[in-house]
Image 1 (cartoon, rainbow, N blue to C red):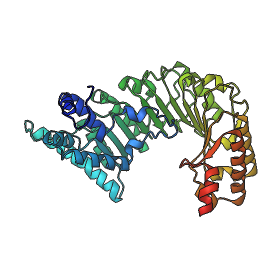
Image 2 (cartoon, one colour; image 1 turned 120 degrees about the horizontal axis):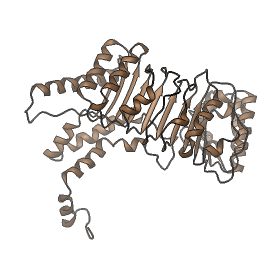
Image 3 (cartoon, helix red, strand yellow; image 1 turned 120 degrees about the vertical axis):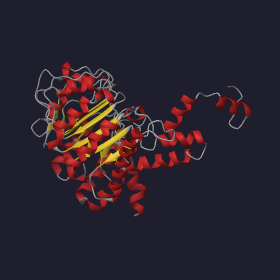
Image 4 (tube, rainbow, N blue to C red; image 1 turned 45 degrees about the vertical axis):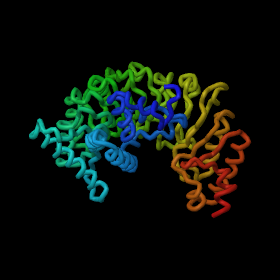
Length: 421
């Protein structure tokens, strides 16, 4: 409304005209941003995107402060805030105070939901609608708690992470899939140490066709060449330490995939990860591969399969870049996945430097993941420190930067922070 300013009568009138449903969505974003903000790429790039950030307790505590503040505004907002008390659930059987408080929070939610069924019609009853759940299934008791949560509180779940012990894997997966109709809002599913059925990819696709994020960590996926993913809204896929052999990604229907993370099982080669990614590469903006192999080659033709790739995450010191990035290719970041220990010998340092030179002159930022310059100079060898300083000068000439996990360039650290310590 033209001329409306905060505090003016016309602005107040405008606020009064906003439907209650819109207010509900606004308040929901204040205390618990919807799943889309967890899966959308920010302007700063994919590397800083954390797929599990919605399970970080500090984020939850911050949102709880906002929720409690909303309770003080009016009776309607108090009702809204109370109805969202159990929007985040995290349950792990660990003896630290934080985990014990989280477990009690889950048990309170289950007890409250159970009581609600006994007192239907009570207008003061506050429903339980969790939207994010992170569960560790390590025992029969934690398995029972998880099943109760799925049976009693599933209707608005958008994000579910299950870290499962091997012996419970098959039954947990079966329970999730058989109850998928009760979880129509599911968008991000992360399964760790789950043993999969004969065609797990098809089963997950049928159960949760609207997924935007899917993660398999460890566990066993049978080598069934007829199995395939069909998730047309999928943006992020992580396959971590699950054997790639037998999978046929060229048959998968995931046309809008933006992020692909492949942590290589020791039985697979790193080259296989790049070959695996080729059929999925046309829309990728981030590709990450982790490997413990001492050396691997990046295929010569890889860049034409990744025409939109802006970020490449890999252990640069064990890779061999055979073909420079073509002129005009959008690759912007090369992120070295490793610590100072991955640069502790001359061959590794030489390969690292050679790869950076081979990648071309258009790489704006090189990031050393999980590395802190202070730790380098406190714990690293003098040879490694001297190498990083030489590399920093080389990159300055190329117009690139060497950045640690905190976003500090080595050049700035050496000029300012290091001198002050």
